[in-house]
Image 1 (cartoon, rainbow, N blue to C red):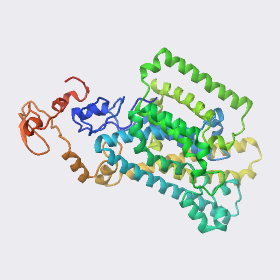
Image 2 (image 1 turned 90 degrees about the horizontal axis):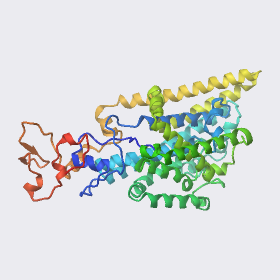
Image 3 (image 1 turned 90 degrees about the vertical axis):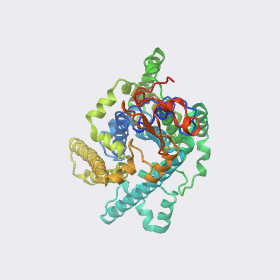
Image 4 (image 1 turned 180 degrees about the vertical axis):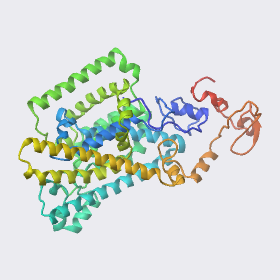
Length: 481
């Protein structure tokens, strides 16, 4: 649905490489391409996607506060889905974009290493979240604060069986309630390099396989290691459907022309009717929380509700509303870019805010005082999440330049190490800029050649004509010979 890319290609791409990145097939299979991709060279990341991710993270933090006032205005109040679906969907979208950018620059091997490292980072974030929750629970027990939040921290169980509890948490058999989504993300990060090529080349096959796995998810849940008889709070066999939809929307976006056509407008009206019907049902008929197993296995009702809302948001994005909101609220964009850090510390922030409201509840004599206190806690919670994101971004920006370039690269993804860059350069013929006075070019072997001749004419190896194109054609990405 979102046609705007997150990661544009590197600035040093040759014409043929740029054409492959834009979606034109090349006779050279060594450099991957992204099909149906609209490339923007103005920014390294999509601010609209980062804005939506940041907004979802803030909403997740507020939803974790049981006495929050603003949580009554969030998505779960009006629909059969919530911010979890939004975050997983956008995670699939961003993962597909990152995979495309990394394979275009460093090949599939680099992408596999990067996602393997990303899964390790998520696992460390999961352990840190669990540790923070245990410390909060132990502090609450020491201060004789017994609230509903205490049971979510697993602190009472830790006091009874400390070693077994730690072992279960480390092996994912026991997942603290507020951190239960992270183990699912660990598996997703490991699977992206395997799934993304299939999604890119055979989208229908990938979607059908994802739907089949989603339908079989309840019967496969027992295969997951769990000390809880209920199983994982987020069944990855079911929730992979959200990830798949995000990847499909990134690699095969719906064109703006179709969205503005009569068929697209009919789909918009259908989505609007479904969203309004679900909102009316939730507000007027059944406003009670749905059973946990519906969210655990991603029920069809939640999928239909999310897809209808996602289509409407895509229309707002096409009209430029999301971009304007992102430009007006840059701190929210920063939250989206520091997603894992904000999620980990947002868990701690939500526990502190919820505990403070429950402890102070006896001091409120009127409903107005309680609502004012809840709103104040919500504003402080949002401010704390924004502060974490801004502080994290500044810490990363203040790192040494060499480390920062190696970590983030030119287009928002991790770049290859210098040694790996040299090995990649040995496999490619890099074009230099063609000035009006220069008669010679130099390839990576250091052999001078006339500007009108290709390396293949000197070495006997065939090179496509697109490799001889002037760099002036790169901006237009023309397809002529």
